[in-house]
Amino acid sequence: MKLKCLVVYDEAPAIDVLSTYVQATPGLELAGTCKHALEAFAFLQNHKVDVIFLDIQMPQLDGLSFAKTVHQNTSVIFTTAFKDFAFDAFEINALDYLLKPYSFERFLKAIQKIHPLNSEISKDELKDTLPEKFLFFRADRKMVKIPVEDILFIESIKDYVKVISKDKCTITKQTMASLEDMLPKNNFIRIHRSFFVNVQAIESFTNQSVCIGKQELPIGPLYKNELMDRLKEKVRQ
Image (cartoon, rainbow, N blue to C red):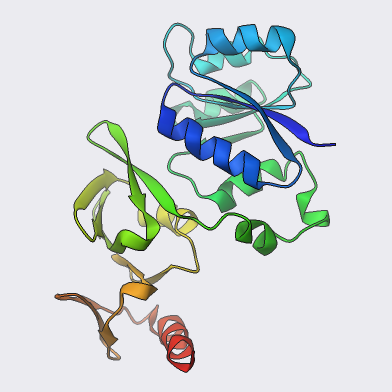
């Protein structure tokens, strides 16, 4: 039997991402979407759901307050851009706390806490059901959608990163560690403590650097062997 899921979010792009993730995951069924907590409260009066994906900062009633009204048999997974509420979320027995932007792989880790997906199908097979076609980054107080294939490389600048794509540069407050979990592994590789690159965008390389367009990016010694193995594999193909 599939787990029925409800998505509660006041931003359409976030609803689209979560709905796509739910529909791509074996064992899950999208029961509905709501734009705020009061709409979700009304929905739950007539529908039984097993999992709620819930934002925290919403109009009229915040997600933390709404979660306290949810039946104890319903799992709550918070999905938010704000890390400051994680302790409060787990205090009210939230199943997980997904900090945006998060990848499909991170989404699956949360689901596996309530549904034994890994006993029926491997994580790699699950990821294959939903190739990452785009990512969302928070910039200028909104979520910016960027197609994965358009991203050339990502550069770290202290607490921020620059996402360099084919037609623009997007700056967002994020760490390289969080990007490690977010970026599709089949598309991106870390070549330096300050750089992730799209493997498909590399035009030439040496033992010290890679070239993407007019940009020459350094290869860090800690990442050299893995990068060279990856590039040699591409050459053999």
